[in-house]
Image 1: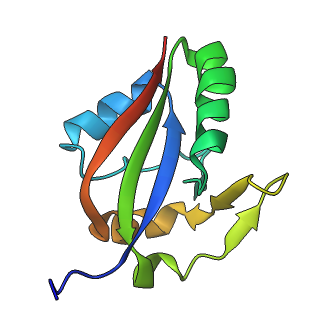
Image 2: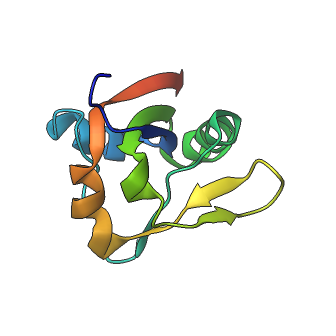
Length: 117
């Protein structure tokens, strides 16, 4: 047994500005939310993240990225899964004020797994 806590894989579709902030945080954390962003929305399905990055982020910011990261499962279980549409449109709704605590439970680095120019 390795002693490693179980993790949950999450994805986050993002644009170039947010990705630059993640890079500044050494790929270990998500930046604080802006005042008009009271919720941080990681998603549970890679295909859903791809659709958002490709169809929304590219249109609104010129490029879209899908990131993948691991969060300790015991911690992330406090946020109920929200179905935001179809069967695979699943998100976690993390209040902005919880983001520092959320970031502290990320295991490893945030990785870019898809890019859409």
